[in-house]
Image 1: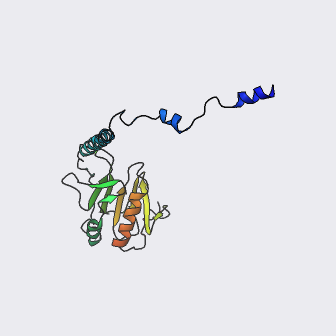
Image 2: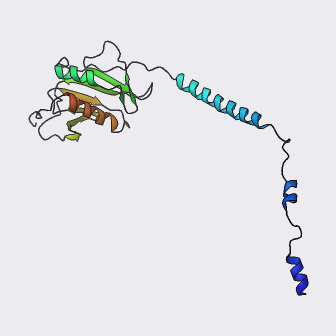
Length: 196
């Protein structure tokens, strides 16, 4: 019985180099390698062309309308210096044209052709809500007062600058503009209105 058990455990077929060669596909079967490479290259090129056309056919950006707000100090040298220093990009937001006639010392940026813009206007009057005891936020070295949801005013510069941010814009626009404002306009002590 022991001999029979040993024989059952031995492999019935031995696989040597000759047997392995039987399972290989001959070189003549299947498409030529050059044809496969050409087909893959053509497919990748077609995908690239489709993506390029999709990106280039986006809607052109429409000019942004900025509501008319009194800006008695828009022609101040500080506002003129700021307007000259404003960047073309604020993270995902690209500088946008303004509907004419545009308010003086104003700028806008958009992330998409139909997206809500980031709005900036320099030389405004002190916001009525900015009184003694109002909370102030520091972004870098610029002090901001939130007058309304998503609308902020710089309060430590010789001119008031309003910045309206769309919901979900993230910190990049206000951080970038704070840096530009800090390097362009000298800080002054804040001057809130008396508390009511």
